[in-house]
Each structure stands twice: as C-alpha cells, then as structure tokens.
Length: 329
Image (cartoon, rainbow, N blue to C red):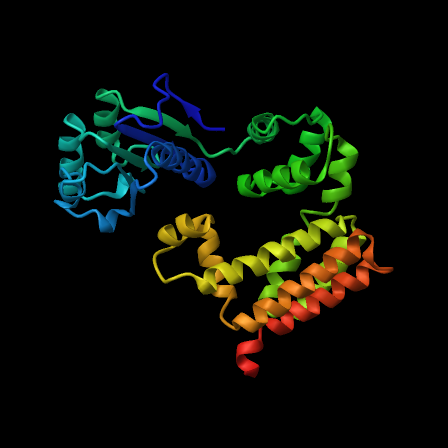
C-alpha cells in the first residue's frame, strides 16, 4: 500500500508519488483530484506526459487566472523530463502558485533524482508507491483493502486470495471489491475458494476478454475450464458485464488520450488501451444485444433458469457474435 509523509494534505501545493506500482500511482493522482474537486467542482485537471510538458508549458499552465480557478497539474514519468523542463519545474517548486496542486509521478532511482531532491527540499507531500514484489507485501495490501472498506476477512482468506490471483495489484483490488459486494459478513477461506479456485489458470476476465474480442471458441474453452475448476458463475457474469459495458462506454465517448478518457469514464489508462483494441468490430446495436444476453445469463445463474452453465454458454456465444456485428453489417 502507498506510504505517505507526515504532510498528508491532498491539496498541498506539491505532491510527489514515487515508485513503479501503477495502481498506487493512479490512486495517488485520484486522491488529489478528488480532494480538489470536493473543494471546487470546476477544478481543471491537466494530466501530462513528458513529451507534452515542454519548456514554458508549466509556466502557461500555472499562470494566474482571471477567474482564480483551482487546477491540478499531473506530470507522469517525471524522471523522463528534458533538462530544460526540469529547470522550469524546479523554478516553480520554489514559488508554487495558489489554487494549483502539482503532482509529480516519479519512478524513483537515479534517473531524474535532482528533481526529486528539489521537491523534497521544499517540503513536498510524498507518497511512496513501490512495486510489490514480496508475497508478504501483497498480503498486507489485501488486508488493507478489506480494512479500507470496513470489512473483515480472515488471514486464511487473504492468503488464499493472494495465492489465487497472483501479483497483479489491480486484480487483487478488483477481487476484494467483488467479494465485498457479493458476500455479507466475514469473508473466509471457503468463500474465496468458491470464487477463485482455478482463478490463475482461467479467470472470469479471460472468459470476458475472449468473448468481447469475438473469439467464441476460446471463450467457451475458458468458460468450461473456469467452471470445472470452481469459479463461481456469478463471477463470470460480472466479468462479462464489465467487459461489455466498457465497450459501450468507450464507443460512445469522444476521442482523446487514454489519460483523458480514463478520467471521463472512470477506467485506468491501461484498460482504455485494451478496450480500444477489443471494440473494433462492435456497433451500438451489438452492445445492446450483448447487454441483454448478460442480463439473461445473470438471471439464469442466480436461480432464474434450470441450467446456469447453459445460460453462460449462450451469453458467451451471443457476445462473441455481437463483437463481429460491424463486419456483418
């Protein structure tokens, strides 16, 4: 989990998020943006990569506004900024503007260390976002995820979840959210076993990904393996719903960079890139058909039908066909 300095005000003039764990870096940004928007709903958020922050750009973004608007300026991969731009940022650090929060995401290490040192020297709020390579760290992360939402999970359940999911923090966070949403009371090892046995070999998300890509045979194979290894059918319908909804959201959104679309749609940037690749054969009618299929499958696995497996197979085939609706039109 991310570790913070004593200065824990999200609206501090400067925040530095240091490390290579993408989920924690994204959460650091989200925390600042949420605090800024809570203070001013019209906060202007600028999310920039090194190639977009040229010499002089920061001065333009932080110049006084006639309307005194609040602004959040996010700079990703700050270790890759050019030397001239680093000079601009260091100059800004010495006299940050009011109503503006600068967030620097830095991988850590020797590259660009001078910028980190300068930010620390002026007392920037710092969030450590290290890559979690040790199983013990991932276990602590899962425990914290449950605590953060006020839910109780046994130590055995937390360990079983880490064993089933693996090292991907986004997947671990998603699994915790799913369990919290679906299960009442204390979450124990038996619950995790029902949901995630065989999860590493053939996840519900693998089924969904193959289906929305129009790869019916592979989706059905993954589905049958998931069911055979104990993945709960409700987990599969949930993943199918997420996959189809993501297609629908992105297809109706206006074009833009992944970071901009991520803020607009509430998805991480990495998922925007994946969904863009998956949505090529889709049409609005296809999305509507697929959503109806998911709804029918959901009813089927929750007691509305006699054969949950058949309900899931039917949904997978329907979604895969819908994914190719553009080519048929």
